[in-house]
Image 1 (tube, rainbow, N blue to C red):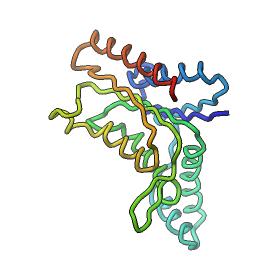
Image 2: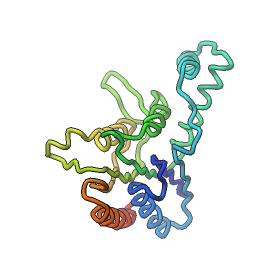
Image 3: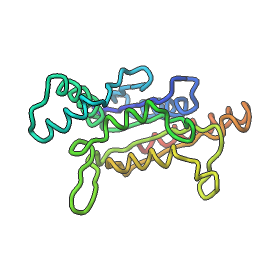
Image 4: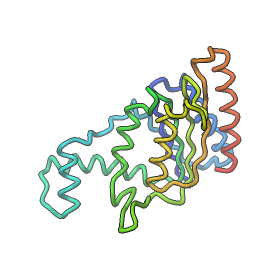
Length: 209
């Protein structure tokens, strides 16, 4: 059974343009693979553990065979639980809106929980290398404005460029995506058209996922 991890990074849920496009992708994929197990995690509904002082100390001490306090071990174990769920998936889907030119803060929290050396990436004398390899990922992005590649506006895109840098850093190479834009600048009619267009493209991409 194929395990699909679907991460939603919007509190707007079905009203989100990114979630709508990602939902269309997942629905099309389910038709292709009805036996697939899809786990949906909305980072705004999920109690993500903090990566705070005890967790940082726990990671360092336990990673270096040093004694950790019960609090430190418990804090790091919670982070390991998130990492384990992430690595256990066979395929990944993300719904990522743009917030202030970047990604939502809760998704950044999630990234900081899963991106750890020896777990999702490693390094040697040649540099860094990803450990989450051979798995496909689909991302649906949405933005209020437009940030086309090769234009001055692209310099404001710290959403797609950052998120796909993260994906590549931990090992993903098979990355497909759609972008819903503009969702605000063109007015509601344009937003609706772009949403439907992205949903159609997303559903088509599911055929090769």
